[in-house]
Length: 301
Image (cartoon, rainbow, N blue to C red; front, side, top):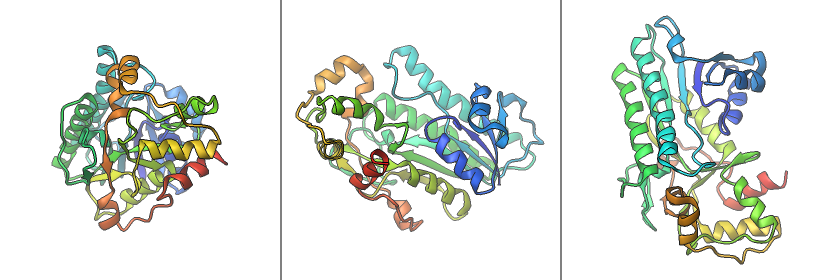
């Protein structure tokens, strides 16, 4: 396939793109910093620095949209919120505009989203048919992101919305910020520790994307999360055991809210998400179904 991908130099993109290249696909990677594309992939891909350079005659079999400034890393000031939203919405709109004018339409459009779509729902089991609840910022991002991507359907394109959980992998992702406090012996649960954490190993994420590209029967919303989410208390217990460090310092919710502001919602909200459609409709076999084996693969290799 000829594939146009955004977010190809991010944490997920740096794992997905090599897998696609190894499978024989030809990649064009959009980045506002094309030098990063060249540094990462050399001449194995085509770097695209501006969407406006795409014309109606450009042809792609598939588009994968992983664009967006990192959720973690900076406090959510009003300016940062604007950046988080715009880097997702603007790029998605640009992609849909390209699809609209393309003489030959892509067959499939994989577009990022997140489990934040569901909001804070406690112990309620959430699958792709579940409704959102609440109105926090991460929920707004996901809802608007999906709404823009859905417009590609008007042009006859198969759409897969990727409602992604907490991605665990080597060299980045959600797990990395947790490791240092534990190594210094000051790790612990967050707040009550009862909030559910839907997670997925990066290897499974990559394999799912490849499957969704190729299986023409699959479309719509998909929860990209392992079948067995854990509560925060269990997450902390497993991490501490693997690192052979204590986990005795619980942090109350107010400390996160004071230090992180609105960004604390990602750590304190509870989403008991299951990948019902991947299991039932796609019969997908996860490589990592339990958190401990996933963490050991990442931390002990």
